[in-house]
Length: 366
Image 1 (cartoon, one colour):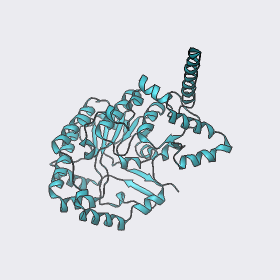
Image 2 (cartoon, helix red, strand yellow):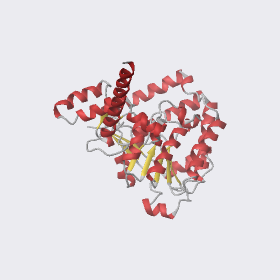
Image 3 (tube, helix red, strand yellow):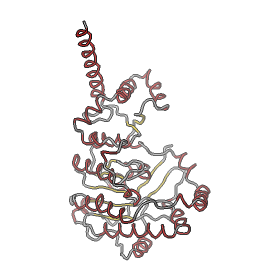
Image 4 (cartoon, helix red, strand yellow):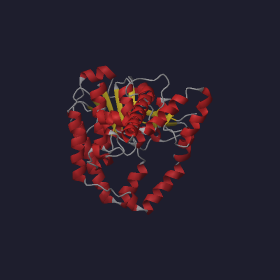
């Protein structure tokens, strides 16, 4: 009798497990195994990027941290041509960025990588397999990652929610469930994923708030203190950036830098001059190392021009004019001519004139 009950229990568990896997495979929220006629995307960028790499066709991979999330892939496509994919995530460390880029390059073989590079990202040397918030096995799509994906009960809930949205009577209910966080796959427009609404931009990025933040930093210097070691940052930079770029000579890397408010650096210089000196030395070192690579194109943001202000419905990430760019590089003992001067002819032919300034726009929704 006990054996019969045990057999029924095991059979029920097996059927339930197979049913969960079958539903997740059929809907496939991340589109790891097949496409979808009506896809939805999650704002969990670390998880979603694993699916985007497998499901999207692209020749340009764009990666960075929080600011990079604001950029729409269509803006990159319009400015530079080609088809891009955004693989950015908030607080993304350099080991994460290298791992995600490695997966993208080995899977889809993009011709170009646009890398919004931040010195703070190189503070960490953690192994990606130790990070609970990064599903590394999902990127690898190994047995552990596949099993975890297909048998995930939270993913089952998302699968059922996506399936239910195909019924008009249930669509509003499912939408409301996404608003309260029950369902994670909220966005049906990939270009809008993790971008910001124009109202948010106009309310959060104003002159008075910028000065308020500056005064707050001035009164609380601990917020500005650099909590990393210069030697370790440079070592991690060589490993995760320089060595990685050298390992992919057939990929063109366009390096851009986050357009942080100039007030942050003014505050750092006035309040913590030693930290400012460390910051400047690290960035000078990064620029010199990057400029020596033949498949790297450098684009430096001008942080004092209107192109970096945030208006009601647009934020422009623009590069500097040549004079101001030369002054920046000149401080680092370098001369800027619009590109590294070592770019291959094939790169210029493929994407047009590489010395042309790159402007990435972030348009708010209306």
